[in-house]
Amino acid sequence: MIEDELKDNSQRSKDITMVFITAICIDAISILLLIFQSYKLKNFTNTEDEMAIIELLDIFVPISGIAQFVIFIVAVIFFLRWFTRAYENLIIKNQKTDYSKAGSAWGFFIPIVSLYRPITTAKEIYLKTQYAIKGYNSNFKVDTDTSFIVIWWIVYIVNGIFANYVSRKQVNAFDIDSFVESNGYLIVSDIINIITLVLVLYVIHKITKVETVLRETNESVSEIDEIGKTVVY
Image 1: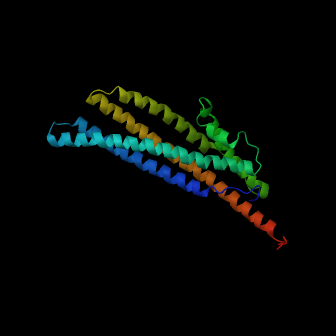
Image 2: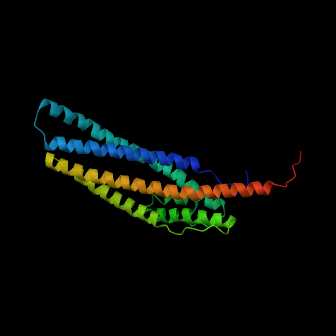
Image 3: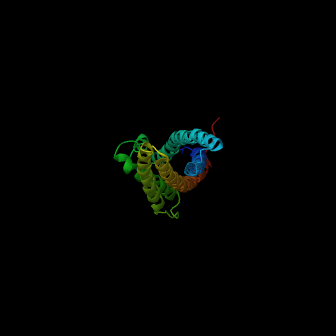
């Protein structure tokens, strides 16, 4: 393997995109179930049919919550696989990075550090991938606008804070009125989560786009370097 050969990240980009799209679909189903459950609770008439529907919803709503948790764990794993490889490619292309490959991942989990390092490493990936392209092509224009990364991260932080608040509301729901109220908050939380997922999909799209340009440029240069070399048998 050539020392500065890039590691293809395109398949990981496709994988995490599919995982996030699945997560959006699960959130959408959860919202519909919660809306229907709240409607049935507010209009409960104590008939057998109504009770059967409510009991069925008491099964399906928790199942949707479990599905959301499972897809969240899967999304974290797949996202970090994609993210760390994108960061590793900067190191391979001799771009000066603030952290190691492992450091770019651990920044998501270390208390306090997790509030700022992910956004700085995401900016690094987007900008320095372009700097690597410019190293091959001086005419390449670097896009320095990273506002889309900032917006994603702000919404992500807000989403986490609001989700914690909603969890406390659910714990304190003991009657129909408080249960319906907590459902309302949970619906809003799911909507914010969908917005967060759409924003991160855009971040992945933007980074993948410049990664693709870098990979294709790198391959073209490698092919040119091979021209004229004498093959020894």
